[in-house]
Structure formats: C-alpha cells, structure tokens
Image (cartoon, rainbow, N blue to C red; front, side, top):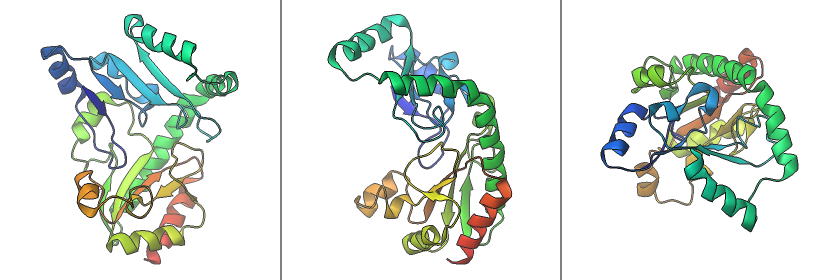
Length: 242
C-alpha cells in the first residue's frame, strides 16, 4: 500500500492511523512518501508504516543544490534495496551525501521558519477576493485539519490555492510574479510558485488532470525563507494583475 501525505500538488492529508490499520489487517507493506513533511514534521513509522521515502532534493537539501533520495525502514526490508543500489550503481554520489548530511544539521530551524511563513501566506490568500480556495494542513478550513494536527508537528511549507479565472488566470498570475521563483522544484530557501495546469501537467487531457485533483486555476506555492511580507506582497501584486 503506497501513499503520499500531504499530497502533491493538492496538499490533501491522508490518515496514517487508518492506512496503518488497513495495511495490518490485509498483511500489506505500507510505504509512505513523506517528502512534504520531512522527518521533523511527521513520523509515519509511528503510525505503522514499513518504509518511508523522502525526496532529499527538496526540504532536506533546502537550497536546490543536489539530487538525492532516502528510504527508511527495518533492516530486513532495506537490506535488499541497499545491496541492489551498491552493486548496480543507482546510489547517491559522495558529494551529494555530504551536502545532505550537512543540511540535516539545520533542518529543524529551516523547516520551522518555512512553516511559519507558509501559514501566514495561507491566511493572507484565504481572505483574497480573487482566490476561490486555499489549502494548507494547519488552516482550520482544511478538510483534513484535525488529522493533520494529530499526525504532524507543523503544517509544512506548501500552500495550494485556486485563482479565479481558470488556466488563463493561472498563466497571468505566474507571468506577474516578480520576487518568487518559477520552477517545478520545491523546498528551497526561495519561494517557488507553479501553475500545474499550464506547466507540469499541461500535456494531460482535462479529464485526466481533473481526476488527479489539478483544477484549471490551481497554484502551488513552496513558501521559502524570505521575509514573509515580501512574499505576501509579491503574491498580492501578481493577483492584482489577473
């Protein structure tokens, strides 16, 4: 049983207790992609997960410098993966491993500030007239708010919102951004904004895209470490141009 929580890009939160019980009942391995939460904000193994995955390229690195991934679990499960990686080549380079090990020293400090900024950004967006919907796990309006509070230390740095006006409005919003970066990456010190319908998921049919929860005006913001008022002011002026 494979799941991601919070999800990308819609920031839905899955109940890890429920998933753990289902996996146990049916004798399944439970694998959780914990990329958005990091090991600091959420510990899926405490809820019954057998393997936890992280894209270390994101918040664990924190500066968009290197590629890397992490798989965590019991030795009996990880040993085979380790041997395969060692013997066939898909292993992290020593330099990347060093960068990521140094990045872990500042993970807690960075993630706490990311989360603080993200919640303030979400609260700003929630009151904007050109925004239909805002999702951040620690916003009280989030559909899975209580689940998020139960299993996460803080809400993470990702904010998803629906800009009024559909795909064209999403494009206009991105084109008006000045301070924030435009990229498909996330978890950087810099705030990164993306409009999936016109970028990462633009090749999908409307039906397939909507089935994946990616609406026409959905915008994902990976909130960075800039002064939060600078981030908000950039989003505000971009929305005024929609």
